[in-house]
Length: 185
Image (cartoon, rainbow, N blue to C red; front, side, top):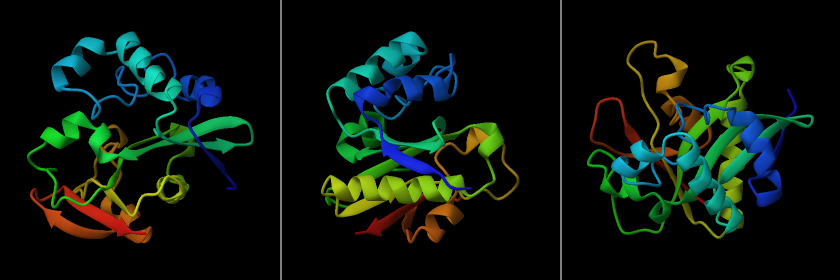
């Protein structure tokens, strides 16, 4: 399938709302899970997280890319400087490996009817290009490397094999199923 990709900008916010639907992609997350301390994320589930993410987008901060099939938004990949992800900075398993200024691919959301069509790889490549356009030298991801079949809802960080196909290499693994992977641009 031929998809188009665009960075999320204020004028594309309605497309993201359409894609995420009333539940905010996954249980009211609105792509704020890594951007907030856990207690703030929990308290903001739903409309609170939606308002916070809308504010990020209105400020013009890089947030990610939307995939389109024609004019229909069908997928999302979050990418931003790692420093924008407060909760990621606190993670023991995903703590920094060095002091390099990296950009982070933090999540994917793809409409169920578009899954298993190669869209996650294309979204990841588009996210890397978005980061590159903003001056990134290194893009980092935190995919799952499942040992058994895992439901789509539990692999919102992506899977390691997709990152490998996009040219990412594992830099550290502090958990059997959670490698940290990087692509140097």
